[in-house]
Length: 258
Image (cartoon, helix red, strand yellow):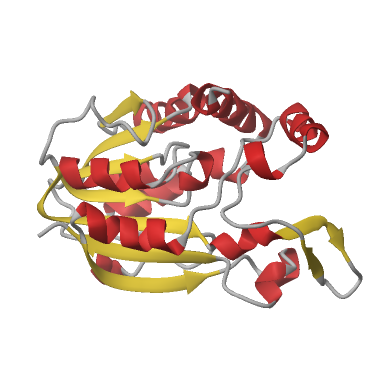
């Protein structure tokens, strides 16, 4: 099936349904960013360390698969020249709405994160890529394209899901929060679910998801040419997520193009 087309529509519906990752930042947050007081996340809860960012004033920044009116407007208010690239027209509309509301100059581009052919080589000082590559079947093209459009010395900040998230059956959680191992990795909604489960997932309107190995997530960045220079783990609040009570469920990396 056409995963990109399906997930484009699914994320448009997430905007309509008020998914937390689709709600634009407030005017107060934009004002604070203009004063130099801002924090943004690659993963659910831990703000990205300030020293992971290059100087932002006048920097060319690509928010990759990062629509929703959140990170892009904050970085623009902090002084960057921001391009937001996303598969969902409605997510991009959130960025344009904040830009119009706050007088920010933000460029939006619709497309597949695996194909940045609309963007020129050696353009960006910073690529900000929050947890989103779970929505494409292959991740290595994402890293190759990011490397191509980054400038020498440019920084790639990426968040991604711990692939171990996908071995469990979260429909079977006991009273103590213990979950059952069910799936083999790498996981794919298209291949790991039976026909009835896949149809139920699609009927629910949720985006299709795919796990990726750490070899592809971290090794893929290295093979693309990046050099890793930072790493941290994150998780959902343990009271909100059974698996986060036991392990880190997300990772974040900082990488540099030589």
